[in-house]
Length: 249
Ligand SMILES: Nc1ncnc2c1ncn2[C@@H]1O[C@H](COP(=O)(O)OP(=O)(O)OP(=O)(O)O)[C@@H](O)[C@H]1O
Ligand SMILES: [Mg+2]
View 1 (tube, helix red, strand yellow):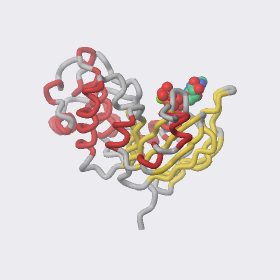
View 2 (view 1 turned 120 degrees about the horizontal axis):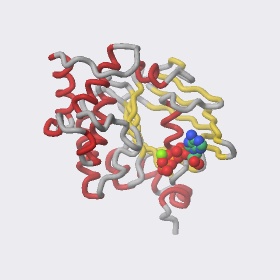
View 3 (view 1 turned 90 degrees about the vertical axis):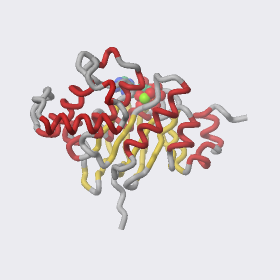
View 4 (view 1 turned 90 degrees about the horizontal axis):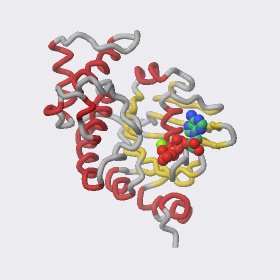
């Protein structure tokens, strides 16, 4: 039987008077391609942060393949197979993509703090193979702060993929890149993930991207999920058109 790889149950979280998560219930099957949509401040990143341990819910539960992971540290949750990229890539800007990936590899080998491990043949092979999946070999040895935004996004995702996660959360993988670059960027990401048995949850503001790459969409509004269905169903929902896409007549 196919069991959900990830379950969120009755998640609640406020920041002062702001309701960032209210009665959030989500069940994700292995291999899903799920998109999170919603206006600015709707609670998309908060959901990603709760699932990955960066924000603690005030109540509710997160389960990974049936195991309760609520309240575990981000590092522990990553080790268990829930990995993420960030709305703004969290890379060491003075290092190269290869070095950043080596750091991610080092983090899979030890429980101590992040460090740049020695360039053993085995680690380098693994780091280059990971970069190659995203077609980034040409950028491998250039400092990150010289690289275009789209490349940084991909390096951040490549770092998450080193662990072969069961769940990968991508917070706005196409933000900060030009409209023409968005489809090639998503093509590259999805192709790199194709051979992985991973559920992908990505936050996206561009509905053309959502329609093309997601098989299911969650629409957030004021910390709540107001629609959860196939992309065509969600995008034709009157509340979604009113509160998310602004296409209501
Ligand atoms: N650490 C925090 N401290 C205080 N308020 C926060 C914090 N994180 C989020 N919020 C608030 O919670 C609400 C939801 O924020 P969240 O970042 O989840 O929105 P979002 O849907 O990701 O928006 P965007 O599309 O702009 O990234 C917002 O009102 C935000 O200001
Ligand atoms: Mg956000």
